Length: 465
Image (tube, rainbow, N blue to C red; front, side, top):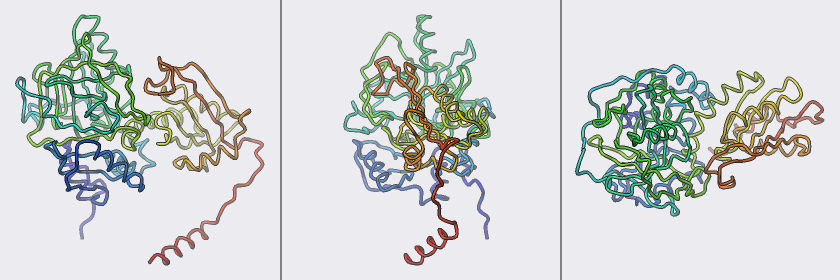
């Protein structure tokens, strides 16, 4: 009799293909392989939406996407249980602590001379039409690269940055991309503008899921996401240098596009189906001129489902949640859980706590609203409310909250540029809803004994058999 490893994904190294093979071997019921040919215009997204309507969120491997020329993997991050498996087999409730613990143990990259991504290197005569892309929504301007991870380096100051930016092919060697987050890459580009030079970058399209999680990390300026990737792996990220600008990129990536963002050139980009559930044409319209195309001999398209899909939201919010949970619990020991519900895209958060004094829930909510620039609404509830279920939070609001006493609103704060309800410059108001019971609450929650529930579950199981 063989003993199953606690972490069956530990030996997949930093290679996407090995990860998918191991995942299929050990968790085959959670990876759906689609062998029938599908189209590259919305069919992949439609499959994800149809599964979600059934309450299913498996990882998907499409073997034949018409006109693509390579397999397509998507929906990897749609399930928190699957993310927990990526992080060593922790349960969904343990993701926050495990992510923070690993990301804090940062490890600098290890430079190697070659890797899978150096198997094919083209510095002239290439056409980006060979890079596989699909169209996700009918309202999109065209096919998009949703897993475009842009790497930039300021070696003079020892700064590296890795971040996601939606991108669209618009020519044989040019890409339109958006830096609408006005984050660290935007800051690095403005520094180059002042020097009168373009910004050298490398776009990674497809890599091991832990590198993707690291690329979504929320870090201070100057802290390198590639070091976080090392922490998540528990070993240095293997990197190779791009041939023209020497940017360190994952050695086992599927594709890498090396070039420059030209601050003087613009490219029409958008609309694109964003995490809000709306198609957004808000964009910086930046132009990336590609000078080198690198890829492995057998590349796959690793796609991130766009729009307000579970995958898109989880990939962005798990690092954010992890940071917020740690901050809140350090400052407020009574906080027991934090959850960003899919129903609220990135704009809502629920926090459960045991209050030790009146007003503590309001203080916690203001802290969360102040720390996370995306949030517009925070709901505080007691610790016996399951904040992973919207219906429980709505019940707490319905039965515990008095609007004239328990709602706090703050106006004129920076928000997300992609919020369709925000002002043109991205300012928003924010609201805290105190749905805790409070010190003078008069009511006893109706409950059923665990023994009775166990009998009911057993009876249903016998009836179904």
